[in-house]
Image (cartoon, rainbow, N blue to C red):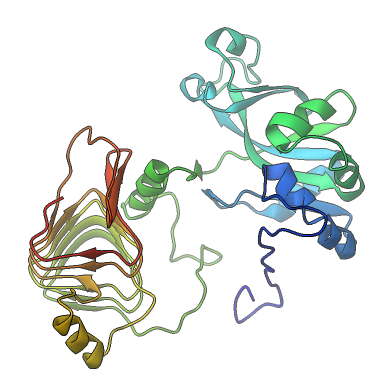
Length: 342
């Protein structure tokens, strides 16, 4: 269920192997193709296809209404962007009436000359957001043809045959499909200038977990998103996201870090067992310093651990942590013993 107050729900259709298909998802279109039976059973007139690794706030009712009013076969959500970002995205040439005339995936600088949709604007190019409304019958027909990706295969192929419209979305939108962007956008949400106000009506909500409130004892917090059920003792935390059930010991310093929290609390018996096994307790131990890192769920970080930012840190693999894109990522359920320096 979405929440306690509405009748809507989300059904998770996981990737699976079936008698009809022994392969995992091969792309965005293939992921939908592998669930055609569920789509047919829904008997809806339209299908809204969204990306799971984007962050934005859009009223989908207006998106679908635009699709209906313009008599489109397919409607793409498009975002105006500057020339400097255009070469990394799928760029659409959009007419004044809103119809998509061409699609170029990651165009070169020379190709951009002919792809401006709003000449004279500081954001003259239209980028595909990877968000679509399809008329269901057309979608079913298209998925019977070869091609595993909407943006690279199916959409360019249909431009000359069907009416494809571009719905302009000029609000905040971030693709968080890489570790670096996931990290950067999470920290952006903790800043005073964040694009979302989480405290206003119809904002972004999480699954209700009915956890106790966060407890803060003598800690100093600046630009911090603090999850439910945390317990902070005399820590100094800045520009960070502190996830659910995080236990942070005294004298801890955390800067520019995303911690995912924990799935459970430890009991006194659990902590006694940890001591016997020479394991740190769940959470972040006394005197530890963490900078520019992502701490995955259920990590055990001991006392006086140092996780420092190193400029141009090369990628590497370790038993309990990895380095990616200049960041240290402490693995899920990792154990980092007292005094470790990373």
